[in-house]
Image (cartoon, rainbow, N blue to C red):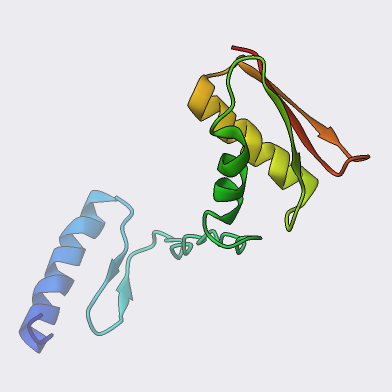
Length: 125
């Protein structure tokens, strides 16, 4: 940007006189920081950056664990996947996600079995 000189300041003041005569509101902030006009300008609100929570488990660990049990399943097969190093809710979520991708929605059933400490999977179609 070019330097803010006295000549530029005089041109600005002249332009402001003309704008004032129109009766409009405005706000001008010169490069030297001086503010002109009666319009109140709100300071920009910084955009909030959403921080994601760290992963509970290593990348693809849960997916690989689940796929080891359900990849070879055929229609009518049932298997119980033990919890292992994972929690029951995350395990069922991963099983449902992978089964849905592999076989499509409605072609499997999952249920948590806290007594056997695992997730039961039944492939319907």
